[in-house]
Image 1 (cartoon, rainbow, N blue to C red):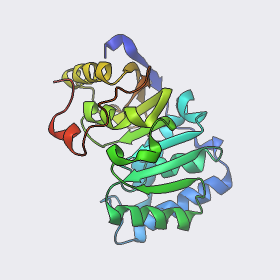
Image 2: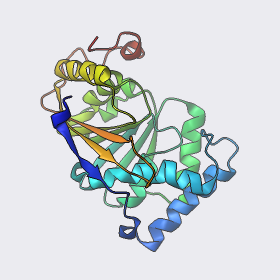
Image 3: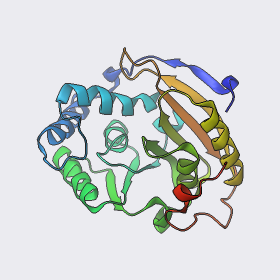
Length: 235
């Protein structure tokens, strides 16, 4: 993706758009992370988790495709971000938290129950094997999941034509972006832009990479589980 595709830097997330009830739900999420011994994260401190998990997730609200989407899937959801935070911020939307590890799925179910998040559901499956998710999502979210060509291959079959992938990244890497652009062509996807965001004031190298699905996913995708990582596209 060329430098010309970069959008301006978005300021730190304005939490004033959230209601008091939404903030209470986010606080309940942070409580579970701090106290649940099986939380799949090393960030347990509430204030730090609020910045590094919640703030980072809510940065995507600056994107119109996220804030207006009806159906979103968070693949490789792990501890639940960005999916749970966005489910709380977007009560009109339906979120699917997709993870392949049973313990993480159980944790995600506990955290949704504890915070009263009724518009998010846990899908315990690999992204490549989630049949019900095919062509069913306006937006696919991925945060700290895999190299970008791999994320593209996971996401493409799950998107409707015209849907978009939002991929959280740190410092930009030209080689990886070039591989991702080549992979996108194979997957009937196209790069739309890179949005530099500042989920907290100190964040300097945080980017949301956006790709659009422009046509039906070629019939050979998704490939068998595990092949996207073993034989990544765009090499």
